[in-house]
Length: 249
Image: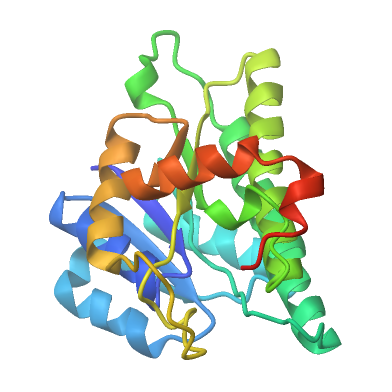
């Protein structure tokens, strides 16, 4: 039975990915700062769900992750869905610093812990690529360019994508059998977007979760969700900096 750890599973995309993996027969360990919603997942398949409260901004987060892995009996997939983000046009310091603490420091702490765990695993003599352990994380299309309405959010999402890319290169150069997946959704109808702003091309978390699980199964490396955002971000990359600063978002 395949085993997955989902960090940030109490709501939104993380919750729906956990449900999708359960439907496919995975055994899962779910974690978040609040336990109440996690118990909903536990009730769906008590024998295949382990629950742990983990705050990724706390120093004990890695220790608690290792305890959850041990309770689960191993880990084939580490899925990181934990993150925060707000528009902050007035650059309120609390919002900026909390975003960096969660999306940069917390992300680095947890991805690093998952990476070190997978490095420590014994490698069988014969191991097909389909059997490699996977580190998958939700970054965002917001990391494509610096977005004025959400400076720390777009900056930390760029950090996340670059960090995964760097680890993928390092793992390859070290001959490590670890697969990486960078998931970049557009706007998703979750609690993260609760500021009453009329976001365009809004997607449902259930649909995004299906795309993510399919991408995990197909061993993709980078997945922009969906096709509209793939076109949009391709266009963004073509815009020079001198022009980008004049565009109203």
